[in-house]
Image (cartoon, rainbow, N blue to C red; front, side, top):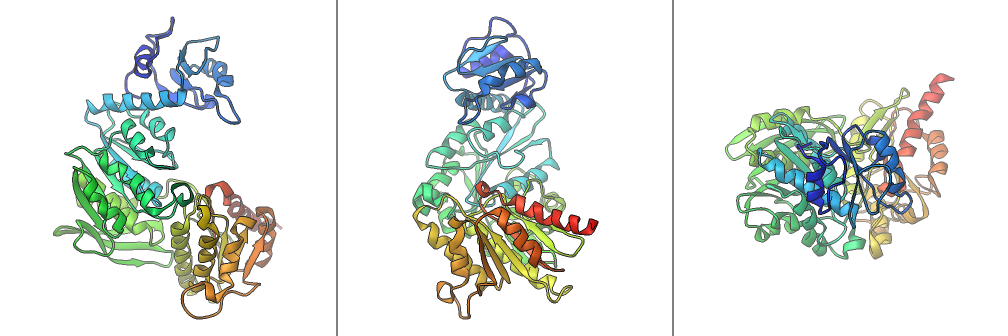
Amino acid sequence: MMPLSVAELAAAIGCPPPATGADAQVTAVVIDSRAVVPGAVFVAFAGEHVDGHDYVDQAWQRGAVAAVTARPVSGGPCLVVPDPQAALGQIGAEVVRRARRTGLRVVGITGSQGKTSTKDLLAQVLEADGSTIAPRGSLNNEIGVPLTATGVEPSTRYLVSEMGARGVGHIAYLCQLTPPDVGVVLNVGHAHLGEFGSQQRIALAKGELVEALPADGTAVLNADDPLVSAMRNRTRARVLTFSTQDPSADVWAGDAAGDDLGRYSFTLHAGDRRAEVRLRLLGRHQVPNAVAAAVAATALGVDLDRIASALSAAGLRSRWRMEISERPDGVVVVNDAYNANPDSMLAALQTLAELGHSRRRRYPQARTWAVLGEMLELGDGSEAEHRAIGAAAAALGISRVVVIGDAARGISVGAGRPDARDGAGPGLSGEEALFVHDKAAAVPVLVERLREGDIVLVKASRGVGLETVADALLAASAVEASR
């Protein structure tokens, strides 16, 4: 963390310093008392189910030098503020402000899907060029963004800030905490459509990132998405575009081709320069993510060959995003259970279909299984969107669809209706499009039916928690092997 005393931290959040311990140096900022290390400041939130104020004493026992609280707590130095969450934002902003004096550059990334994967790719590219801080997992809200920023040190060269939004104004606020030098907008899809009301409102919110850029900053925009490309009119910064289709973009990917495990190679073009990239990550949808990361790194002055080399070496850093595992019996489980919306669900199904085609070279009888749960936050269009996903699964030739939960039942309906999807041909039969009421019921159905060589995709919104189904399928093979 940047050098900061308790007194300086108090000034940053607008409260008096404590009577004792004001000169103590802050080593970290945490929101979980179990993560406290000596010298840390513990920020106590009063949540819906857990009140952090109940754990302040535990934080002091672990070596915290102060606690940011909404009310006084006896036993140690308290920095009392009206809103500890807002104070966390102020702390993150103060750390970034100080770090800019030593040359910190900030990249903001937003989009309806692909934010976390792109963040992970970019972080691994920038780490090859200098000390980099990026969130682990998907810390992209008003808590995660400043919390990540507090990890910046004097030697940190780059901060990658993933920015999510649940409404208009959210990204603008996050940009106040970690003002970006480079802003990357990946796409405008259907995620959170129920909260925003329309794609145009989503575009309005995502574009707040480029509006926050300074005149000497850089906006990185997806030339393949008209709603993103139009954001060039909302920024005073220079604009760099990326594409997987258009050679007129500033940086684009050509000759993309996947191997038998769904990992893509492509040629990265930047002006008259080119470099070969061979991704280790699964799925065609990682290609635009990688190209976006490449443009952001280019904007920061990283050499193209170094970018291509780092992208080719980059691995999976965030859990439950197209994690692929093969059981001893040859069944492959693809755990993509971290989140889902109509666009990412379709991308995952397309990847599953491609993997199935490749898989049959080794296992001619291999089947593709899509184990799908609810896509949350779709509003009034939820039923139609779920039916469309089922129809897409049938159109892509997915062998079996297992739908979990009443709210997702439309997927099985769509998969079984040829009139619900584009193209000719019948939908899936009742044996091919199965519905179960919950996760517990899904596991035995799958365990009983899976056979050697099958490949299983598990995907739903985060709130559904389908990673437990993927774990159970992998554990079931271990049990069988031990018998």
